[in-house]
Amino acid sequence: MTSMTSSESSLEVRERAPHVRWRVGQVVKHKVHGYRGVIIGWDLTAKASKEFIERVHKDNNELVNSPNYAILIDARDRLIPQLGYVAQDNIESYGGRIMHNLLNNYMERYEETEQKYVPKPWLRRIYPDD
Image (cartoon, rainbow, N blue to C red; front, side):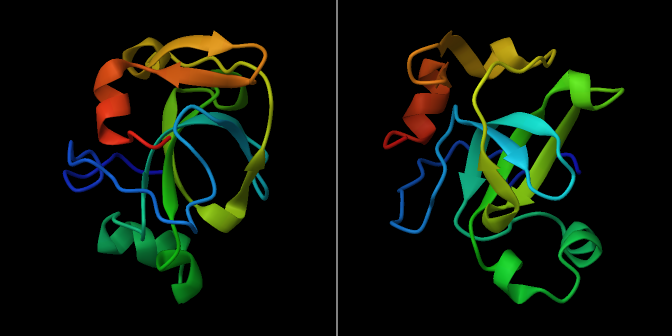
């Protein structure tokens, strides 16, 4: 986990590429660490600090060069609220609501039928195809 840098929290509009698997608002689960969370953003390639990339991805350029996702981690899975930045291959779909003190800053509501959150208008402007 890491705090977002200016490049990751950029308000620049993102154009979806075919290989971006997950969407803003989807609830996912980390395949290795097991925590749940909701996607609040993505980058086509990892945009975290060099130190973070070296620590988390080590020498795995495949993870660095694949889409990476900013995730609000469910407070029930961590003692303190956290934000994750996770490579695409390390997450899988997971239905259900999450709990996080910043959730209402990013999401309007939860859609039961689609099992996903609806992003706030400002976030939809950044990720219009999600």
